[in-house]
Image (cartoon, rainbow, N blue to C red):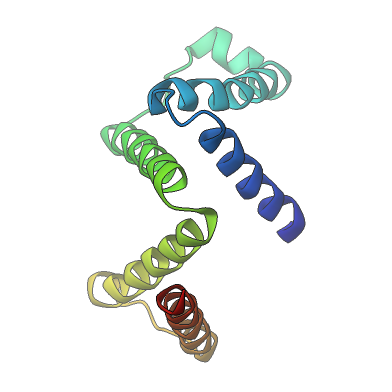
Amino acid sequence: MALLSGFAGVYTEAIIKKRPSRNINVQNFWLYIFGMGFNAIAILVQDFDAVMNKGFFHGYSAITVIMIFNHALSGIAVSMVMKYADNIVKVYSTSVAMLLTAVVSVYLFGFHLSLAFFLGTIVVSVAIYLHSAGKMQR
C-alpha cells in the first residue's frame, strides 16, 4: 500500500505540474476521469439492482451531501497544494490535519488518545522540522 500510495502521489504531482499553464480545474477533471470510470464499474457490479430500483441518491441525508462537498473541496485543496508546492507538503498537511482532528475529537467526542498517537505526533513533528530546516539551508 505504501508503495502504490507513494507512486500515485508522485505521478499525480507530475501530471499536475506537467503543464503549468493549464487551468487547475481542467487538470482535476482529467485526473478524475479514472475515478469516475472505476466508480461506475463498481456501481454496475455491486449495486446495479439497488440503484435501478431505488435510485442513485436513495438514503442520502443532509450530512451525506455535506460530506460529499467537504471531500470535493478537500480534493481541490490537495490539487492546489500539489500544483504550487509538492507531494511532501501534501503528506505533511494531511498528517497535521489528522493530528488536529484527533485533538478536536478529544474535546467534542471524549476520544482517548493512545501512546501510539503521541509517538506518531512526535515522529510527524520531527519530520516537519527536518524538512523545514533542510529547505532553509538551501
